[in-house]
Length: 342
Image 1 (tube, rainbow, N blue to C red):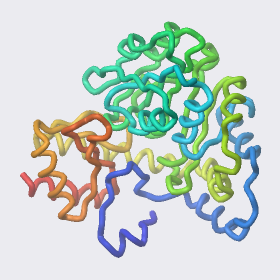
Image 2 (cartoon, rainbow, N blue to C red):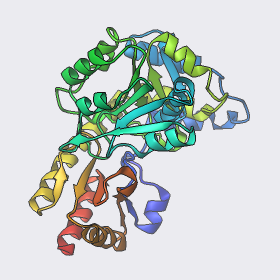
Image 3 (cartoon, rainbow, N blue to C red):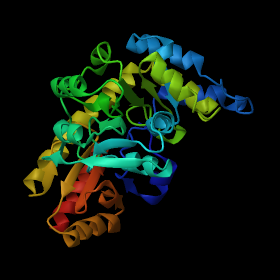
Image 4 (cartoon, rainbow, N blue to C red):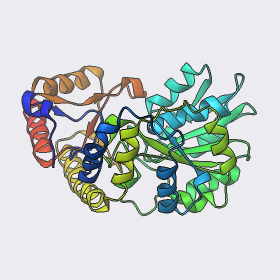
């Protein structure tokens, strides 16, 4: 599978951004090649063809789909469109940094609920909600901890939520999950009109650089979101690549299988070395240290050997590092470096 030219030249191993180490779907790359000469044309303003294909994939109506510039773009739409100036959003501590960032740039309050054993506590989230809460943001699997909340837990949470609070479940890493308790969110959505599901083409589909994702929700919510959509914010090549990527089920299956094998190996080896590593359902693992000095020592040892990982201060994990699951040869080099670092 493809390796970037930069990685070939520099020898850098980038395990910091949870990208698909196997690149993009060959079908997506072919679609980009076939359409690159048309970049002088504006994209479809509403991405009707992509919405139709996603609607068929998820057995929903076209009106239940909205397209955004990555899942992050849809979160931005949610906050812009649904949360007024005197209202707030609720999310967890130790979660995706973009949630708090997007709330801040939209001048909205972001309240954070405590976690239990690096897992989102829906009870804590419910306790944080008040009469000014309009949106709850749940990353599942959670980034950076890699943990999930179960189908039953999400169902009970939705039952307890008043219908005017929109519950957004960000499933950017869903294709990597192997835990059978993972929610069937589309099934829950049949009962709860206030549930919005986010999906991304950035992770297993390998289209992070093109910035495209989507939301699935009740047509009234989607209609409201699209009133705040910036026209042409999803580009033409991103849309054609996403359309082609959806057909490449073989690529997705291979990447998910490889990730499962390498994630298990990475977790086991790190655990065996004595690291405090959290079991993950994503394409990454989180390691926590007793002190920032130890975190920095390991971070710098890896950096000095050409391996980039993510320091988690911005995510609310002061003494943590997140390590993306790479290709087998990358993971081998990472582990050898960590053994040498002691």
